[in-house]
Structures are given as structure tokens and as C-alpha cells.
Image 1 (cartoon, rainbow, N blue to C red):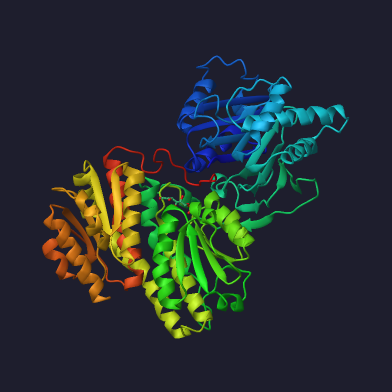
Image 2: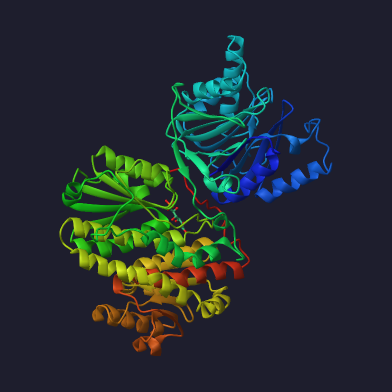
Length: 637
Ligand code: F6R
């Protein structure tokens, strides 16, 4: 939701913090701000809109373009301790005054925050009763005032001045907060110190030499250090240039989880593409290959990453629920076909935001598969917690190592897709599919339904996919041309059957979120029950066709559906296997994809739809990576 960066070291903090924010801007871009401690003065700057607005203001400030009474003797660029924030608004609109950091009344403490403080109305009323005037509509501002009051109280009590004081004050404040938060704070009286806290929201530490970092995710500091510490739930961390110390909210020493970041630094940059999304589409063959890497043991068994479930637990499973949101939900819809086909266990797919509210019937023999790229999606996290309360087993598919969802699950299979910066999910979707296939095979094997050689045969088919995808990606020029043709279409419909149906839903979602066009995905057989009335002369209909080598009936049925829409004036865009001659007479545009086994087909048929949506968005002049109203990681329900 929001991106957070903190720095304590010897270098100018402003540059490091702003660079970090640039890498985190995918998390939210309603406003941005920084607070730098310089010569025991606290200097802040914040601006509504994208980070570029803040950078412009900072540049003017550096060039003396604005008269700034708070510029300090050395100026904001000189301080070597700082925090920065890029926001996705929750409490209070995206304005300058609501941008973070928020300062205490005396201006000496600054706070940034990701999450929602659920008891903020009560805290605000209490602070206002005490005479504090609020300068914003945010829940975060409460924390700045509470922290300043706590520091005053501790100083008045004679507690020794020094870095631990800020951590102690933060702990006292956190004990009063309800909800989800990552908080960072600096105090003008304590130059060289940044304190952070987390509950239900991400925070990682980057350990440098003579400098340390805090951030919502490692991409913010990957160019400075690859040694990181993941903070646990309800922990407070204090960093200085030479120290990282972690405690729980009661002050007991605690340890985070150390890890080494092996992502390529260039993976977090655009690498020559106009948009991160296009780069991430192109990275899909590698992402799939990486997700498959090392999954088969010598004896042909599939390995998950972190397993706190026994084989007997998996043999006892009598029902699978897949729970996820958005694109991740679509990967679950595909998985249902594979899991039921391979394991013969009933499998339901649920939107995480609905799951717990309908009070599903769960018990110890229910397996919940939660799918999340970020590992922080609040809807999915809450569904997971509900499932655990009902004693169900939870297996997570996740792209973000150490995030909350895998940490709270009984088993994890990480998709090794690398950082996904564009808001619209692409490589996460394909790697989630691969992970779902692996889980389906693992379940089938553990339950004795598939032999090791049968599992190995499907894994071998999966291992052929990266090359097929590379070939397909070189043939996207007709899709780009088609995007120019479709850029002014009032509506685009997508149809598919079997695993092609979720692909149709995903194609429509991509077009809606990126090009702001009306788009709908339908099960092709459902058209005749209503939606076919939408078709007018020239309405584009994208048809996802299964392999003719698969179940013939399936293929024939969709060819009939294509004829039906064409007979009513639709302009058909047919995605079909190369050599599929049956569709030729009914395709106004044909996009051929490599031959692929039926259940694995979404790995190829999705790619042209991703490219189509990105190119239409660009042709309409929109920001492909940061579509309006959206954020990469949605940490509110
Ligand atoms: C769409 C998209 C979203 C996410 C959804 C879940 O392109 O990216 O629909 O798939 O918000 O996010 P994660 O996977 O992080 O839980």
C-alpha cells in the first residue's frame, strides 16, 4: 500500500531515501515525502502526486528556488539520517497536508506509516481533548503526537537521553495502537537514529557497513546492501550507522530472520523497456524456469520450500479451497481444473474478500491454498487466519520471501518470479500457475494417485514451457498492431472454456485495469444465456481456443461459439494453437500459440492478452505501470 524507507549512516540521506522511494513507488503514488535530521534540526518536505512532484520541490529547494524558513543552516540535502514515504491514501485524501511524514506539534518528531490504525478516532479525540490541533485528516498523525508526548514524559521522568529512548517511546505507543502498521520515526534531538515498528505490515532491515536501512521491501536498498533482516510480528527496531537492535513491543530483546538477497539489482530496473510491465512480460520464461528449479528430488518427489505439514496431513485432505484476489484468484481458477483432474479431491476457488464472511465449512482435513504475489494482501491474510482458527491446514503460494502470508501458513511454495514492479500482475500469474501445478502433482503423488514417473512427465512438459514462451514472445508484433486497431473500441469481450475461461477473465481484468475500457470475460457456453445480447456489429471478441489435440469436444464447442458471435457481427480475435485449421474460417485475427498440453495451455494463451492490454493502455496514453486508483500491494480489507 505505502512505501517506506529509512536510512542512518554517513552519506547524505536525502538521495538514498528518494532513490529508495523511486523503487517503492509501485506500492502507492498518491503523494510522497521525506524527513531528514540535520544538525539536530528536523527538515521535511512532502507533496501530493507522484514522487516526481516531490523531487521537483526538493530541486527548487536546493537551488534556492523557494524561500524555506525550515531549510536549516546546512539544508535538507546535508543530513545523514532520514525517512521517506510514498503513499496510497486510506485516511484522508491524497493532498499535501495528508502526505507523510507527519510531525508532532513542536515539530521535533516525524513519523511515516503504512497500514491503518483502527482505533485512531478514539486516540484523536483524546489528543484533541488535550488541546492538540491536527494538521491532517490521517490516522498517522496521532502517532506523531503520541510519540512526542511519550518522549516528553520519559525525559521528564529522567530517563537517559540517547538512541534507546526513541525505541522505548515507540514501544509504548505501539502498545496503544490497534490495526496494521509499519511505522518509522525520527527525532530532531536524536540525530543518527531511526526507529521502526511493525504489526501486520511489512518491514525489512538492510545491514550495510557503517550504515543501515529500513524499508517496506528490499528493492529500496538492494543497490547498497544484500544482507537483510526480516522483522517479526510486533517488533520494534532501532538503527544507527553501526547498530541494529530489535525488541518486542514490551522491550524484550528479539531477533529477526537474517537472509541474503540474491535478486539481480537490474531486475528492479526497467532494463531498456518502456514500461516495467513489458519487461516483466518478457521475463516470464525465466521466471517459470526459476520457479521450477530444484523442485524434483532424486527420487522424483516434488519439494515445497517450507513444509510444516506431514505427508499424512496431506493424505487426510478431503477438500481443497483455493483463496486469493484478482489475478491470483484467476490462477486459482486454473488450478482447480488441474488439482481435481490429478488428485480427484474436490477443489473450490474463493475470492478472499468473501471467504470468511460466508462462514465456510472447514476442519482439519480441509487444505486451504492461499495465493498471493505480495504476501501482504489483507483480504487473503484475513481469510488465512480465519481458516487457521477453524483448524484447516494452510499452504501458501507466494512471491515475496518472508512476507506475512507465508509466515503464517503451514507450508509454502515460493514462486521465484523476482520483483514485480508494474502494478498489473504478469509474471506472478504465470509462476503462480506453475506453483499450482506443482502442488497438484505433489498432492497426487503423496496420496498415491500418481507415480513418480507420471509426475516427472508433467514436470518435463513444464520444463519445456520457457522455450515455448520465448518463441511466442518473439511473435507479438501482430498483437501490437491489433492494439492500435482496438484502442478506441467501446467494449471488448473475452470468451473461453475449461482452463481458457479463467484466461478470458484475466484478459478482461488486464484490459480494464490498464486501459480503463469496458471488458468482460465469459465462459463461452454462457454467452447464449444472456451476454450474447452485448454483441453489435464490430464488437471485438477475444476467443481463447483449447488445443484440438486435447478433448475434441471442448475444441468443437468453442469453434461453434466463435461462429455464434461472428454471425451476430462480432470481430473475432482468435487465440489458437499453431496448425489449428478449424478456426481459420471464423478468425478475423488469428494469434497462434505453441502446441501445449490442455491443462498447461494458460501459460501460453495468457501472454498475448497481457501484451494486448499493455499496448492498448500505452496507445491510449496511460501509465502502463501505475494505473489510476490501484496499488501493488493492498494491505486493507
Ligand atoms: C491485477 C493484480 C491484482 C492482484 C491482487 C492480489 O493485475 O495485480 O488483481 O493480483 O491484488 O495481489 P497479491 O497477489 O499480491 O495478493
